[in-house]
Length: 396
Image (cartoon, rainbow, N blue to C red; front, side, top):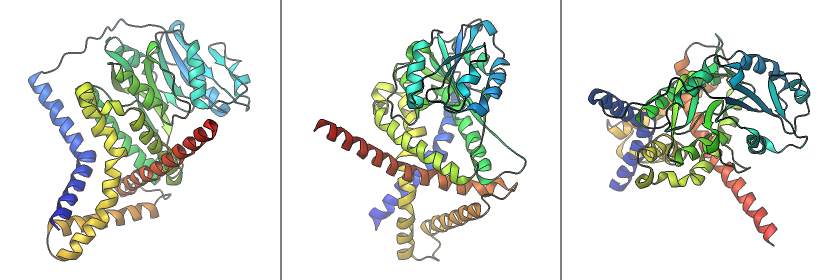
């Protein structure tokens, strides 16, 4: 029994640290550093204004071309220094033909579809500017986003800059909109503190930039290209910085079913990334970056969802033996879990109903996030097993 109690507290500690403890610890470190005035001041050259490439990969995104081009041409950056590049491999919806009508855009198109990663690897060979800014076709950028991102590159230690993903909200919000919006507000605060401490651990694919010469060929089966690209920049000794005022606006998933589908893919990509970036776990080599990476990313994609899964039967077993109505910490935490899952169930019931009671969607969205990690792990293992079989067959 004592061993089970110890395991119980280990699981609880992992969960609390991942979602609350790291944020609190990060905040305290930042406040202490500010008070003691510890840490070098970032040396930024405000006059730094090089040529940049706005790099957009798109597959059959004709419905967004006009709005994206209008938005891109209205960005507050010298027109003669902003190159707009589209890569549309495999698109057959008329988007390549439409893009050819824009004199301000350069199009690289192939009839053959090689996926987003293939398009990125091919298109990057044509980028000649010192900075490349990646953005999705269906996201609109804040007017000053490019200028704010480029400014941070005035510090030679910066190799990547991440913008902020903002979720477009309607007055009547479904669970997917409310939950995702609250989640990204929390993530935005963590990224801000991460950047102040040392480096952000991963960039938002809707808007991020790197020094062009730091781009490395990305494996074609990569699921989270933005995460892999940005963290490989950090592996080279550069930092990833963040400006929440450099933002990309995107619509939330239509419903939680679509959001779960998206998060399963992200979770599978997260597990894939942990495997491919495993050297970043070496705290003796990467120091603070490793601490941030493990705390902010690795735990969320590995131990924490497993801890949540194991905590349910373990707490039930402990309370069953100690008594459900006995006022023990185990009983209290068990019933808090029950209440949490009831609220998650209520969130599911209200999934597509308009409501302003956003707090009801927090347990549901939290449950969806962790469920997606479990399902993402299954997807990753299936895909990995399939790849191994293909390799074995080719070898024979």
